[in-house]
Length: 307
Image (tube, rainbow, N blue to C red):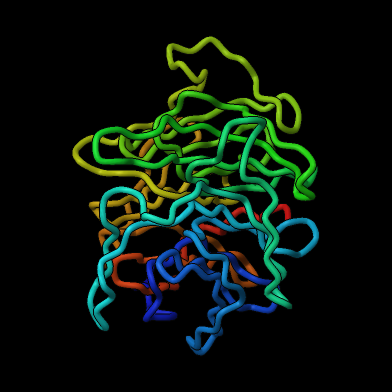
């Protein structure tokens, strides 16, 4: 495995990398409130201003970018050249989270969802599209001085017509992905560093298996020590690659729960990754404290996404 190279720098807490068809990489800059484009030469341009806190992102069936907007975070003053770390709590202008559609050509932003029924979206974090064109997304929730939200997972249609809750009472769900056969949904919990799986019976319908967990998921793997899970991507083999905070690694886990390896990165806030290139063997990895996007040759090809 080669050493990662810096593909872009000066990003304001990047997450949600997406490999675009033209070879560029789209990223969310959470602290900047933008969806941005990284060219092969490292040049960064703004695609759209979303406001709030654009977090996870994916290409939809119509070629648009779909964004999980967490509603915003609190930030210290930005010091050029220094690492950027979010502050505890919610910003004064926080009004809730949302799902947004971004036109990558015009930059037009449309808000699709702010609620599921009468339940407000608190902090949407990451999403994945299935073959039918719907998408699953996590709601991490928000933390305050003395309490925090219980998270959940939703399933929604990209035209804004329908949203349903599919997983309830799950702690700070973050990364989300699908197995190669589309029969399993994976969800990573941040603070517990646990990876859960849920069987899929039909689009947006999860199997109800016997489980001691209140949300009905099956535990795939949990890490020891103080480590935290962020977002994830799946290899073509079915192995799950989870960006791991504190230790600054990408943790690779088999579907059977075996910890296969941990790949060290330079930034402890290693938050997300996607696969790109013609053979899907280039990993694009966001380093949020340092504001960089890394690129490296990955030892196994990534799973081709549905869109």
